Image 1 (tube, rainbow, N blue to C red):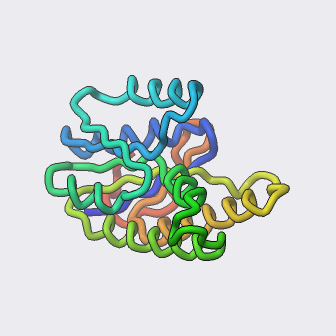
Image 2 (cartoon, one colour):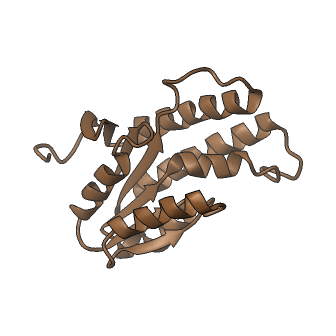
Length: 189
């Protein structure tokens, strides 16, 4: 149906906006959570996100295999909401077993870009509307370490790839969604 890409900074309102978009697609929504509750603070964040969502939505917790989730649910959902791509990319980047045990950072980056290409292709071909949320991390300072710089650069490349493939792209700033790109659904919002 369509890939919709929603990007914004931390606490910009991007997740809330993406949830509104998903709800407007119909009642059958699958929410794909990519974060893990590895500490108490993250558990609280996840709990707050859960409280915002309708109880009728199906929640799937998946930190790595997003293509598999899309394929599994796409025929039974009006929309799949993936929140968030940046956490997914973090999970992959920090997994030292990808693409193989002890793989170099450059190999992981290449692997992640290929995974992002496949993910975009799967989303674009899906009969359901796939809404992906990501953080804009390129507007801040240059990180002071190699891993931080690799993360920032890789996030920028993945965001560009997804925005290029998406039919709609929104930048959320201070709670205000700004339409960056639209090919379909003219007149909405």
